[in-house]
Image (cartoon, rainbow, N blue to C red; front, side):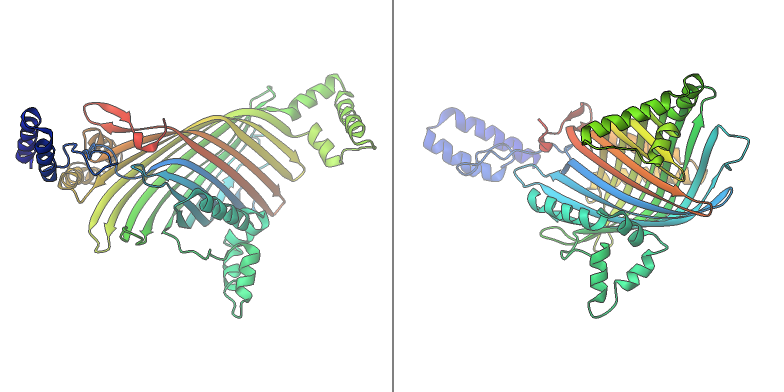
Length: 497
């Protein structure tokens, strides 16, 4: 084919140089049938056919991602140890740009999870009065359905419907997803004579009428720790909630259109660090009381008078609100960082490996935070002010001999020796180097990232509960792919300007 291409190019040059237009155009058309990749003209109104860049990824480009999750944790409190039962739901709306004149693909991800385990914390009456901290670990299982659309309007309408249905009511989230109540609800939802369907409609558990394009199931470990450290005499605390997951699963992609059914076996790990420096209003008010005993009450009275002026009637703040203003609350600033890696091997319907994929996702942001404690109840809210997200996707097409050979060498020279020496770092380092050296394709998309989180909890002597809601919006700003010998080049397919 290479010799043929050279011959065609030479003949085209000779033809162009010395014959009349009619003969020349006729010969060009016939020669172009032999090698259309040389940039020959197509039918009227079409662009010349040109060879694509072999280093450019063939998959779609993720440019927009919006997600919400609701989570409820039931806690059985002990002096040091506690029992945790947790469940939640996450919904995502994604936009993928296919490029090359093809319409965008929109996806709605509907994921739920359950986990059970335990935690350990510092007793309230310990000598470490300046420190409130603990850690937990649970066994977790999750499932997700992914629905695909070829237009934005239909996808957004479906997402909004599912958002109200799955997450719209915190009580529904708690009852449907928590391991303590979820199984009983599942049984109730399968009662005959339409009773189960009506129960499912009330609680947000029935499946949509349409079939998912993809599904996955996984299980693993969920663990983390929390801290609230008072910095000596300063009215300042370091407050954080940090967690990670490690799991393995099976991902099914169902046949549709020209796509064939396949199965992906994957492993993923993630870690989030979220810490804030918070000014303790409680400490500042106590110090103010010593110097100005009436100042706090005067401020509360001022607020009541201003409210009365606005509303035109006498206004008294409830006692819990007064206690909150005068006791435990705080405001602060903090950082959140998240990193995750997803690795999967895809096999076709005959069990033959066809693709290896690695996705690295890094996120970072700074946020403002406020919290409030009233008796046994507490709440905190934080909202990112500026954030970034970087998703890097690496793909080996195992149906191509060169990619399959590179993968086989990687298994032989990196994974097998690492398994023998129990060195988990070497395979990841070598895998990244393999793509930098030119194996497969590698692309990166950068996003502006906005994250807000609300958490409310109530605790008692024996039992307690915690609700958490989170919302994330990621909007792509630029995209590039790796070209060996050149470096990162702009990925025009994503249409990001």
